[in-house]
Length: 467
Image (cartoon, rainbow, N blue to C red; front, side, top):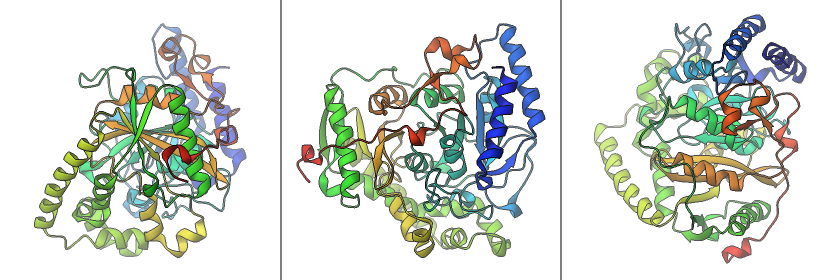
């Protein structure tokens, strides 16, 4: 099938699925077809384009030339004259941008409901939230509307939606992928992330977005004698019995591949995560958009406005004190991970319904970040990977590693990845593309629906010494 035909099929699928809340702006189909013909000519001329013909959705706080950037707020909209560097790099590698996706306004939230464009519903169960703030991007991949999607991640926005949608969410080391052309949430801790159906697809996109071969990156394979830190049962009390069993099954799968596991104290990790919203760092959100919200209060989601405007009076001394506290927590977390190659945790404690979020919007959102909010503050890279089902929805785990260990972490994440996911070579989409030679893979955007092909896993948390 030609790239142009694949574009036509993607737009047909978007129209057929009737999920308008996923998108804020769709490009004209004819324009994307023109891009496809241009990429096909480049491939035929002998260019090695690692993402040739892959369709991409972009979260609407990331600039795409010619489309408004709203950050989920129509009154904030502006029209950029150039792509953000991450988008430009994907296009240069042959990817085809379909449009901009819905999100929690100003990337504030992990639920996907704080948007005037509509609450983004779970791909399988419309009574549940999709997860946020990168909600539209995650659902677009889960529904097979695109091959890849860009999100952003400050407290877990590139990982929590991945867990709820049964897909992969890859969060690189902070600074590895540029955030120029991205509306900031907390500028010091923001990352651009990738959603995909497989770890290999996500890693292929991240390599392109990183712009080459950063010298700081560690070698690409997990070492022999890999050791993985896990949570003690006392840190899993927010999980249901089914979710604890699913987590235990992942641990058992790792042990079966000769990975050694041991529980560590997660206290420093949880304390660091709490600083992001409960400490002074929320002042960065006010610095980013506080003046706009103050002038447009009636045009901003009330929950988002409450969170951000509460930071208006935070003194500089409090911010400096939290920086000092974070320095100490980084040392403690590094000590806890000494001798380990990675940390394995549930991605989120539970998946709420739309009604539950409406009843307690701030508290539910805070709880969803339990196992994710610390990552950027502690300078960890992360891969969120589907790991079966629990409580009637998808269950996911996240692997974390120190900065610049993105490649060995991806290798380890592939060991965790569900073996039931059907994979299609990216090379099937464009012969001669560099990804086929590299062995990377991606889903067929129409025939593949990852949410219905994730294996249910069970197992015993008893292996952790608990029940």
